[in-house]
Length: 413
Image 1: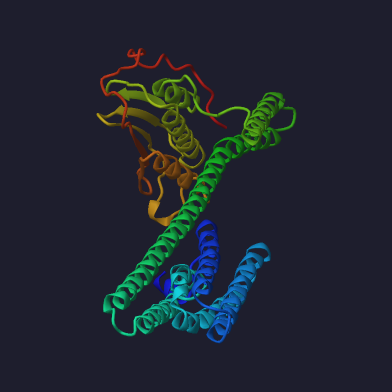
Image 2 (image 1 turned 180 degrees about the vertical axis):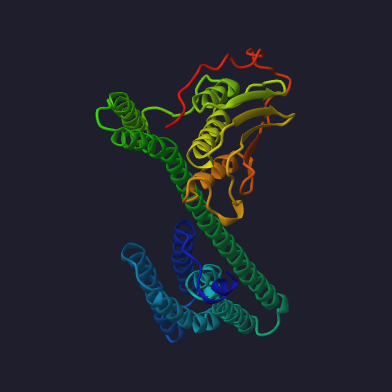
């Protein structure tokens, strides 16, 4: 940022620049009229007129170059050449005709417009010296205040303008950096949102389409393995129904026509239904409270996945789902007395391990945790806990009597 400020001219400010240009033209004309009001157009007067005309034409060329650059783009080389030439002609002009010293104010502003800060400061110093020298010659060295006043005033003006320009350029650079940072933050948020959405869709598809399709395939395979003369109609009908539900669920997920969350369902009733469908026991510990729908949905999916895994791979005779309400969180434990496995291998009950990753993602996405306790031959316990921050811990659900009696359900094939 500092390097840019030292090595490049400032960005244009049309209103200020236009004022400086008009001011310089008016001052040049007024100074010329004043000079020739007291001097004749002869001798030195001819040189003064020639230098004044040359200064005006050079400055006008610089202004035209500025306008052309603003319209069609390009470098500031033409502006620099025109302004440097105008300054070079004005310096001897103000020495021999101090009346033109008033043009110094506009000229100092102009040089800072297109020249680099250091070069502009040097040229401004030359302008101040030229004005002071002209006044010294005019007063024949008799009026030191007339010389020193403009000298120090010009130096202060030039330094102050350069300082203001550097400050504005520094602020502009900071604003540009903040804008870029905000754009990068917005891109990061969009990418994070897209990643979260991909994880959500992957988990939904795994918990609905994959699981139900797998169940349908198992039913069809069971029907194919029946002996001669048997009637596979019930198994085929169940498989057809499972595939039909899968198709409906898939269409809802793809088109976003329905949110697959457990809307209007308490955590106890939702998980009791999952336990009943899997032939598992259900228990509720603590006083039930209101739970956000997203939390109900996540724990329901986690419970379903754990029970499906237990039915497929654990070979367990007993499965149990326990919902526990803690002061600031709600948890669910899914336990079985099956064959168990080694969690450290990274391959869980669903073979590829995606089911375990999906369960963990669901819990972590709501600020919770998922733990797995298992070892070969000693069963498995999957425990999920999700915080209930911001929920009134004293607000108990109207269904305090607990879940209703679980209906008998079919054991998964």
